[in-house]
Image (cartoon, rainbow, N blue to C red; front, side, top):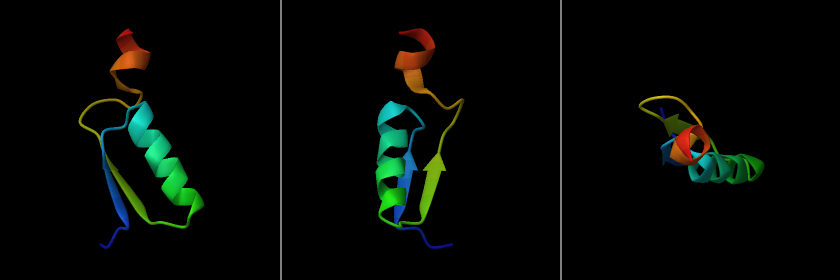
Length: 44
């Protein structure tokens, strides 16, 4: 598969990058080992 952007990590920064790229019409893949949300939202 071909992607315009591969985001590593589903935290706040990764999700914001994916949203911005999506608005520009990019095809995106997000790679996350655990749960989405990131350290700040889960334990900060």
